[in-house]
Image 1 (tube, helix red, strand yellow):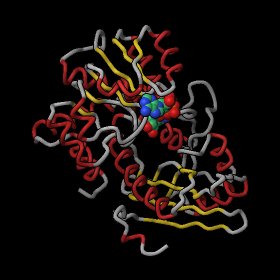
Image 2 (cartoon, rainbow, N blue to C red):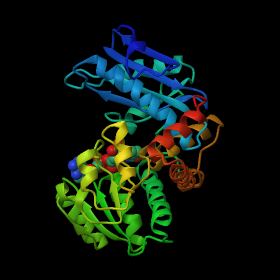
Image 3 (cartoon, rainbow, N blue to C red):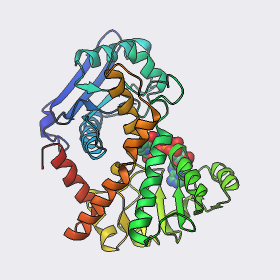
Amino acid sequence: MTAFWTEPDFDDHELVQVVRERQSGLTAIIAVHSSHLGPGAGGTRFWHYPNPKDGLRDALRLSRGMSYKNAMAGLPMGGGKAVILADKARAKTPEMLAAFGDTVEKLGGQYVTAEDVGMSEADMVALSQRTAHVSGLPVSGENAAGGDPGPFTSYGIYLGILAAIRYKLGKDSARGVHVAVQGVGSVGGGVARLLARDGAKLTLADIDEGAAQKLAHDLGATVVAADAIMTTPCDVLSPNALGAILDEHSIAALDTAIVAGGANNQLARAHHGEPLFARDILYAPDYVINAGGIISVASEYLARREGRVGSVEEVKERIRQIPGRLEEIWQESASTRTSPDIVADRMAQKLIGRG
Ligand code: NAD
């Protein structure tokens, strides 16, 4: 690999380590973007990249994203990310995980890993046999922090949507507010359930229409086709499926006052926050509103480092700070006439000492 620092996604990363372990066939890249606030935390992605350079780009880009996300979540954690470059068959062996765990351990806590695409809770358990610097492990008891981060992500998004409704629509609850939810998987399904409890009017869409129908039946919601949700007239559009859904064309066709959902990287390109802002649509920056999952994973790790088991209540307490952070962003956005995504990036840069 030549001169990674000439890559456009290189942003003065503190550590970029290429791992090659012949016996197990492991090839991985570990990147720590910033440790200004604490150890570089972020999941490991197990993915087949036909061009290994794309793996490097993912490690660089995603670790920087984690610096911003962790900082804005108020966590004493920096930003890191690892990618394991899988072969075409995506064969994952215990030996490979052991070699990867050994490398994480050798970094002595500079990098803390967890699940990401292609890595399961069981894989984290395997890694924990070799390193202490792993999180996202099974819950160890009732009300203990850990386990599936999905419900915590949903909870943060729900609170963020309530904050947006308050800020933009001047309403104290979601009762009667029309929310269009794109994607009813782990995150979107949880958001819909929480909003239904408050009496929101829900329209759901998923490419798995059966899943949308089933949830709609349980919640008394309406279903539209997956390709119709982005243009559904509503108060809040909550994207909880794919990234890169907001570009010039889709933004021009939106019929909503608010975009607030958990999908990562909703803006197709960095400059697409601008047309949203120009249309006076309130945007909740994705990495701020969807931080509930990382808050859960980080709280679990931080408590374990102190020799105790973290609690669900302390995770929720941290998640309850998401609305305040969003309000701060929106106020700054209004007073400086700058789109909220740019405001969030600047706040994050300041927090990690790069402002
Ligand atoms: P998931 O796989 O459980 O759910 C995604 C759902 O979206 C699926 O039901 C899928 O059928 C549906 N979908 C896919 N393409 C669609 C389309 N074009 N239109 C409508 N629906 C579509 O995944 P998840 O864990 O719920 O994650 C959802 C999003 O939130 C992802 O972007 C993920 O990166 C992000 N996110 C998740 C977490 C977490 O804790 N799980 C944390 C932060 C961010």
